[in-house]
Length: 260
Image 1: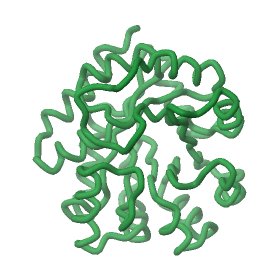
Image 2: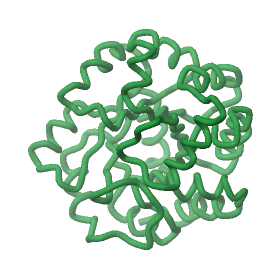
Image 3: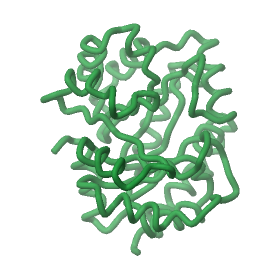
């Protein structure tokens, strides 16, 4: 079992739900990455997902797209992010997950990319435009490495496909909760409990829900069925507005309301 899954399972065994915030690397400058990660670690998150800015994102809504544009304008690249992480990895005690589209990875090369990730203390990878059928591109290089390649499941995934994805799952399954892109939302279009339960019934790893998770009540709703949540746009927006209080409230909602 890889470190990322171990940490999530430890959280669950302690009677808690996992909380993973997403931040855009380089939004506000790469120099701010160190402080943001240590802040999130201090307030009790389970792991941290770090987004890599990309010129043509297919899954990102307006908040994350704009954050990526600001980051690119400051010269952020995947390689620079990883080297920045390596400079303070000894201070980070929660798993770090890299979320990157495939092209920046291929521009480095899969083998070198994984080697740099390992040297930078990365514990997980999310590549939203890498389907299961092509995942061997990275999975083969990650074999025997303590880096989990996280699989995504969508609302339209059949039970058969969920089973296939689950067979290859590491770390956790990312259950996408909307039929669309990321973004701050007032609510969800449908009852997600049966969808999440269907994934959990077929998954050997924890199931975390993400996309559109924006308010404490969303976290409470999803934690009834999932093992935790991933919160992206709301965290990115709060950092941009320098509203640390909102970030603390979102984390508290997971910690304080986890006994279901």
